[in-house]
Image 1 (cartoon, rainbow, N blue to C red):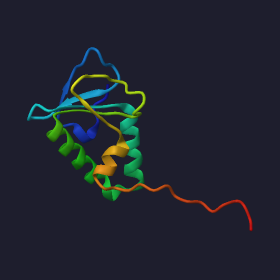
Image 2: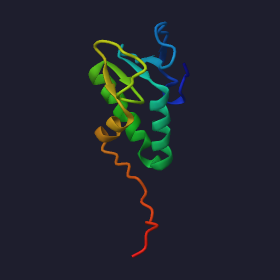
Image 3: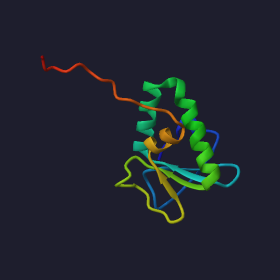
Length: 113
């Protein structure tokens, strides 16, 4: 469990059933988990499009305030945490909702005409 700098102002909750993801609580009582792989993807977005990073963080806050219980997961097929009443979102889900497009850089083909 790690205290990520983006949410250092939030309260960390200890979840004894979960040793991998960090659980945060907002002042309004809403709860969210950050899985390590989600954070890795988030940092990739920050490197690729630093101008949109705060927009993604703002969208995450908006989603948590609206849904109250959110797990930001690294892999949609293999979540580290399974909890009833929580919604699950990947970094791509959040970027899509924030309308931040991350395109792969294209490289020229090695094949000639």
